[in-house]
Amino acid sequence: MSRKSMSLNNPIGSKIPVKIVADSPLFIPKYKTAGAAACDLIANIPKNDAGHDFISIMPNQTEVVDVGFSMSLPLGWEAQIRVRSGLAVQGLQVTNSPGTIDSDYRGRIKVIVNSTSKNIIRITHGDRFAQMLIKPVWQIDWQEVDVLDSTDRNEGGFGSTGIKS
Image (cartoon, rainbow, N blue to C red; front, side, top):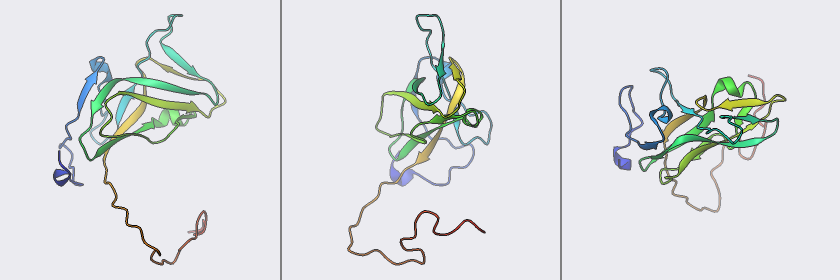
């Protein structure tokens, strides 16, 4: 798909073709509802030497979770990875949120998660723990100048516009 054929108007029902190599049909991302913006990612956690097919994420610990597939995004698109809200409220985070998968990456998709909870968070093989959005991307033509145009805000940074409505 060329950049010229890429459109911001992607009405419900039209789909962007993405090639995928999955360990099994279980790991092919799925949208749970017709209006879902993101598709679910499934934890691919093989049994360890103790026979457990889960990971326990301790407070302030980071883990990498495989999701059972590789893919080929079209040029001009990216995938963004986020944790599912039900786990986010428990303290699970995608460490580099949102994680970005570039269109030229062909390796295994893995999600870097960490726990901000005081409790242990368990992710078991087959759990829907993260979600992925496919978004258009534009590359910027950086134009170096000596001075930027002026605005009402100018260099006002963190908190400079206040918090009151």
